[in-house]
Image (cartoon, rainbow, N blue to C red; front, side, top):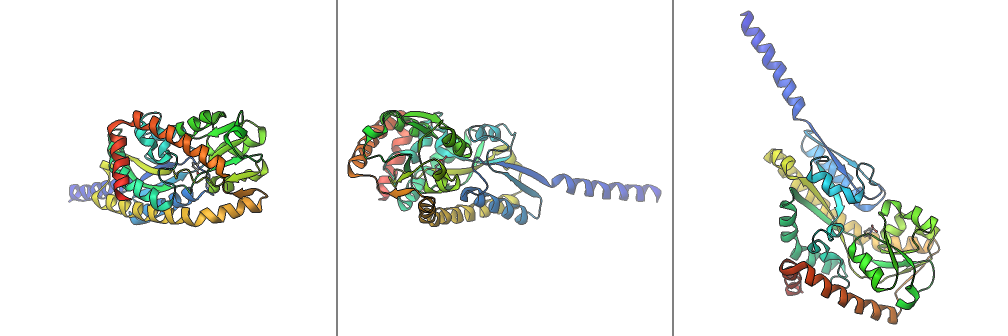
Length: 325
Ligand code: PCA
């Protein structure tokens, strides 16, 4: 009898202990500030997973590059230093040009086209990330990209010598081709960079300019609508494989919801943030005909260069996208 009750007690202890051990905490580094719509979407996704899994997986978001800086997030997840996280997809294009398909000037410059391009690109991106020990969960576009300056700019000649904040190789190449001087800076640090003169211009969305209050240093935003880059959320493959089927289903469902909600926010945010830039005192409007034409020519050069680097995988995505149009 004694032995039996000892056994019971031991079993009970084991059960309590193992339930406790099953509750996992997943750290989710994110590069952009908590006020950004991507971070808001990520926070809701995290909550959805925590609630849906009954607390057995608790996702804790770390916005503003506070846990890992943007450039370090993918590696941190690949190596298991963080379980899950968000990053700008085209931030990896120096590693493989294919990752930069969403930053080709004027290939897909509306939300509708960006959705088609993503549909064409997603299977390849999933495969590339899988080979790097990562599982792609969801991706959300930024609003269309435009040019920020601290003076009126009517042509490429006006851009010569300007210090330009870049966020991936495509933006750095754009700077070179327009005679500007690229300096790569994470969005979380741009207010400081503009205030101190380390950078004087950039290409980005109205959302990022609004979020970072760039009217404190800059004066003009030209709605070039050059492309709509994406952020994506990835999870370490070993961590993913370790999750139960039920929890995987919850995560997939939350990811689908997040992609939908995030995209909706991006659309809604486009005009709202442009209004915000105006309210901050900035001149917001389309680029001149001359500048638009010059940028389109540069776009052709960049696309030719990209197709050479991105090889068959890259061409297949672009062809599949054109076939949907
Ligand atoms: N904001 C991000 C990427 C694209 C965008 O609109 C940034 O400027 O870093």
